Length: 166
Image (cartoon, rainbow, N blue to C red; front, side, top):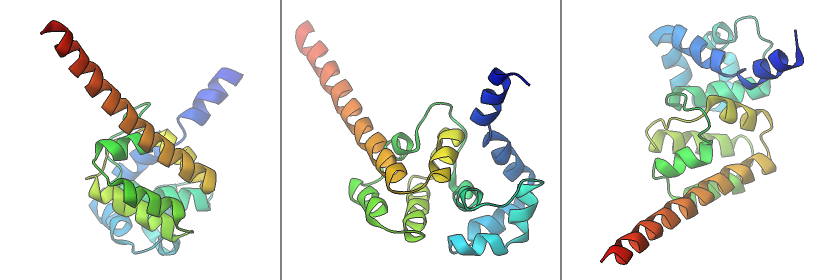
Protein backbone atom coordinates (compact mmCIF):
# COMPACT_ATOMS: atom_id res chain seq x y z
CA UNK A 1 0.00 0.00 0.00
CA UNK A 2 1.40 3.40 -0.94
CA UNK A 3 1.64 6.32 1.43
CA UNK A 4 -1.06 8.15 -0.54
CA UNK A 5 -3.53 5.23 -0.18
CA UNK A 6 -2.71 4.98 3.53
CA UNK A 7 -3.43 8.72 3.97
CA UNK A 8 -6.77 8.39 2.13
CA UNK A 9 -7.68 5.45 4.37
CA UNK A 10 -7.01 7.57 7.48
CA UNK A 11 -8.99 10.47 6.04
CA UNK A 12 -12.07 8.38 5.30
CA UNK A 13 -11.99 6.23 8.44
CA UNK A 14 -15.31 7.48 9.82
CA UNK A 15 -17.38 7.29 6.61
CA UNK A 16 -17.61 3.47 6.76
CA UNK A 17 -18.76 3.82 10.38
CA UNK A 18 -21.62 6.07 9.28
CA UNK A 19 -22.51 3.46 6.63
CA UNK A 20 -22.34 0.70 9.26
CA UNK A 21 -24.76 2.70 11.40
CA UNK A 22 -27.21 2.85 8.50
CA UNK A 23 -26.94 -0.94 8.10
CA UNK A 24 -27.77 -1.52 11.79
CA UNK A 25 -31.44 -1.15 11.00
CA UNK A 26 -34.03 0.67 13.03
CA UNK A 27 -33.67 -1.47 16.17
CA UNK A 28 -29.92 -0.97 16.57
CA UNK A 29 -30.18 2.69 15.63
CA UNK A 30 -32.92 3.19 18.21
CA UNK A 31 -30.78 1.52 20.90
CA UNK A 32 -27.95 3.99 20.24
CA UNK A 33 -30.36 6.92 20.04
CA UNK A 34 -32.02 6.07 23.38
CA UNK A 35 -28.84 5.52 25.38
CA UNK A 36 -28.76 8.01 28.26
CA UNK A 37 -25.05 8.52 28.76
CA UNK A 38 -21.68 7.83 27.21
CA UNK A 39 -20.77 4.98 29.57
CA UNK A 40 -23.94 3.08 28.68
CA UNK A 41 -22.93 2.84 25.01
CA UNK A 42 -20.48 0.04 25.83
CA UNK A 43 -23.35 -1.98 27.34
CA UNK A 44 -25.28 -2.13 24.06
CA UNK A 45 -25.12 -5.11 21.70
CA UNK A 46 -25.85 -2.63 18.88
CA UNK A 47 -22.55 -0.88 19.64
CA UNK A 48 -20.58 -4.08 19.06
CA UNK A 49 -22.55 -4.94 15.92
CA UNK A 50 -21.81 -1.43 14.68
CA UNK A 51 -18.09 -1.86 15.43
CA UNK A 52 -17.86 -5.04 13.41
CA UNK A 53 -14.25 -6.21 13.58
CA UNK A 54 -12.92 -2.90 14.94
CA UNK A 55 -11.46 -2.81 18.42
CA UNK A 56 -13.65 -0.88 20.92
CA UNK A 57 -12.20 2.39 22.12
CA UNK A 58 -13.36 5.46 23.98
CA UNK A 59 -13.07 7.51 20.77
CA UNK A 60 -15.39 5.11 18.91
CA UNK A 61 -17.73 5.06 21.89
CA UNK A 62 -17.92 8.87 21.72
CA UNK A 63 -18.61 8.72 17.98
CA UNK A 64 -21.35 6.11 18.48
CA UNK A 65 -22.90 8.30 21.18
CA UNK A 66 -23.25 11.25 18.79
CA UNK A 67 -23.89 9.28 15.59
CA UNK A 68 -27.70 9.02 15.90
CA UNK A 69 -27.91 12.82 15.77
CA UNK A 70 -25.42 13.34 12.98
CA UNK A 71 -27.08 14.44 9.77
CA UNK A 72 -25.75 13.61 6.34
CA UNK A 73 -22.04 13.71 5.59
CA UNK A 74 -21.06 17.08 4.10
CA UNK A 75 -17.36 17.01 3.18
CA UNK A 76 -15.38 19.90 4.63
CA UNK A 77 -18.07 21.23 6.98
CA UNK A 78 -16.60 21.42 10.48
CA UNK A 79 -18.86 20.50 13.43
CA UNK A 80 -18.71 24.02 14.91
CA UNK A 81 -19.78 25.56 11.62
CA UNK A 82 -22.61 23.04 11.28
CA UNK A 83 -23.88 23.86 14.76
CA UNK A 84 -23.81 27.59 13.98
CA UNK A 85 -25.83 26.96 10.83
CA UNK A 86 -28.23 24.94 13.01
CA UNK A 87 -28.79 28.11 15.06
CA UNK A 88 -27.34 26.78 18.30
CA UNK A 89 -27.00 29.39 21.03
CA UNK A 90 -23.46 30.59 21.75
CA UNK A 91 -23.99 30.28 25.52
CA UNK A 92 -24.71 26.57 25.12
CA UNK A 93 -21.47 26.15 23.16
CA UNK A 94 -19.58 27.68 26.08
CA UNK A 95 -21.26 25.16 28.39
CA UNK A 96 -19.71 22.35 26.35
CA UNK A 97 -16.31 24.00 26.61
CA UNK A 98 -16.55 24.48 30.38
CA UNK A 99 -17.93 21.03 31.19
CA UNK A 100 -15.87 17.98 32.02
CA UNK A 101 -16.18 14.49 30.62
CA UNK A 102 -18.68 12.89 30.13
CA UNK A 103 -21.01 15.85 30.74
CA UNK A 104 -19.44 17.80 27.87
CA UNK A 105 -20.38 15.12 25.35
CA UNK A 106 -23.89 14.84 26.75
CA UNK A 107 -24.30 18.58 26.24
CA UNK A 108 -22.80 18.37 22.76
CA UNK A 109 -25.29 15.63 21.94
CA UNK A 110 -28.13 17.91 23.05
CA UNK A 111 -26.79 20.60 20.74
CA UNK A 112 -26.88 18.12 17.85
CA UNK A 113 -30.50 17.39 18.77
CA UNK A 114 -31.34 21.10 19.03
CA UNK A 115 -29.76 21.76 15.63
CA UNK A 116 -31.98 18.98 14.23
CA UNK A 117 -29.20 16.55 13.32
CA UNK A 118 -26.88 18.94 11.51
CA UNK A 119 -25.02 17.66 8.49
CA UNK A 120 -21.25 17.91 8.77
CA UNK A 121 -18.03 16.20 7.79
CA UNK A 122 -18.12 12.88 9.64
CA UNK A 123 -14.34 12.58 9.42
CA UNK A 124 -13.80 15.97 11.06
CA UNK A 125 -16.23 15.07 13.82
CA UNK A 126 -14.58 11.68 14.30
CA UNK A 127 -11.08 13.14 14.50
CA UNK A 128 -12.29 15.74 16.98
CA UNK A 129 -13.84 13.04 19.16
CA UNK A 130 -10.72 10.88 18.87
CA UNK A 131 -8.63 13.70 20.33
CA UNK A 132 -11.44 14.99 22.57
CA UNK A 133 -10.23 17.30 25.28
CA UNK A 134 -9.72 20.99 25.94
CA UNK A 135 -8.04 21.65 22.59
CA UNK A 136 -10.74 19.84 20.56
CA UNK A 137 -13.45 21.74 22.43
CA UNK A 138 -11.67 25.03 21.74
CA UNK A 139 -11.46 24.13 18.04
CA UNK A 140 -15.19 23.41 18.06
CA UNK A 141 -15.89 26.80 19.64
CA UNK A 142 -13.48 28.61 17.31
CA UNK A 143 -15.17 27.10 14.23
CA UNK A 144 -18.53 28.06 15.69
CA UNK A 145 -17.48 31.68 16.29
CA UNK A 146 -15.55 32.07 13.03
CA UNK A 147 -18.72 31.06 11.20
CA UNK A 148 -20.53 33.91 12.96
CA UNK A 149 -17.85 36.35 11.77
CA UNK A 150 -18.03 34.91 8.24
CA UNK A 151 -21.81 35.24 8.20
CA UNK A 152 -21.80 38.82 9.49
CA UNK A 153 -19.02 39.90 7.10
CA UNK A 154 -20.93 38.37 4.16
CA UNK A 155 -24.04 40.27 5.24
CA UNK A 156 -22.13 43.56 5.52
CA UNK A 157 -20.49 42.99 2.13
CA UNK A 158 -23.91 42.42 0.60
CA UNK A 159 -25.18 45.62 2.25
CA UNK A 160 -22.13 47.54 0.99
CA UNK A 161 -22.76 46.34 -2.56
CA UNK A 162 -26.40 47.41 -2.46
CA UNK A 163 -25.39 50.86 -1.08
CA UNK A 164 -22.90 51.32 -3.94
CA UNK A 165 -25.55 50.66 -6.54
CA UNK A 166 -28.12 53.07 -5.08
